[in-house]
Image (cartoon, rainbow, N blue to C red; front, side):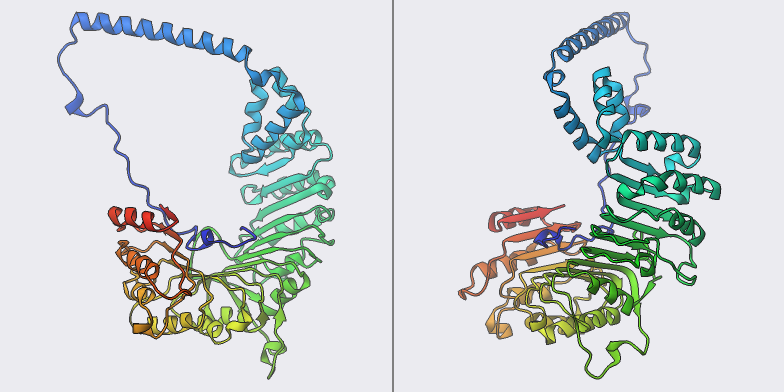
Length: 498
């Protein structure tokens, strides 16, 4: 997640299905393409000559390529520069390392002398039935990486034996002090306990942390902290189906916190987080910039400050982005009412048709002076449901970007665009007068004509306080008229389509 929110962040829900047009493939067995007659002798002779010439041409091309390889400029690069190029390549694709070692003896020598290339310890489904081979590979990487920082990504869901899990974590234990990224997935708490028992050294250099527990009883069993010492460099934490108790250590520079039940799919199930625990985590660090909640809800007890007659809001001075994906409106409202967010720039919400949280924001806009981007998903833009939405938008004139994705009815309709295009004669004042960006995703009825009306109306507005639409993003809107898109491209500075 970009630490500085931008218009590109609107209408960018990555779990919405992207339809890829089918490509026609020519079937060589198609009877319409087969000639049943015998091939004439002269044609056979020509085909044989063509095959011989193609083989000779291929041999000449190979010889030419070999001569060019011998004179290639890359062979003259000094080892330290070649090593740096390898680092960029491995950072982009870990699977590149075996290939680099097979190109030439010189390349292999450079790779062996570059410790950072061997810092990626990854166990996925490809190693599910080859744990002994993985252990040998891991020992080699740990040795060749020397004292370089480690990237550890171990999916123990592919390891059936507790003995194999024990062997892996035992081998890793002496090296976890230099681990900067620790990603672990387990099937249940017993496996997580094995990890925790060997993770005492984890923390001093840790920057990214990802923990996942698959077990359905992860919310009922007594949790424990996987980390045992402060993490002075930890900036990113993602917990999937995992309670906050697992990170019960000081994290003074935490910047991004992502809590989810299941990032792979949307469902009706939710994971419950005690509200006071979340507040303790985010207020313990003064640098939290993003909070992302997916398929989650909050629980509260009667001793919490939120039940007081005049509760004191917690100030999150640096928080710039809030994302609520499949979170109920009550939980969203609870967080907004319990905090002061002077730096909040973007708010992305998927909570269904209940707009209680938006009404809460619109009634106290002074608490969100930096709010500029509003991203709405699964909202109803038709009938009476549109009324509280428009009233709330009237009270948020500072917004410069609006995102609309996957409306609950499947259709956005034209009313909201008509209101965005209407001036004081219809609404008494312009709706969102500073609006510069309009982003749409997975809206089946968008043709582009409704957007064109908004763009042209605001370009022709006589009021100086009304901004022109300068950024459009239209993705997965398959009813978009190509001719209208051409017109929009000529009127708007930046247009993104997919």
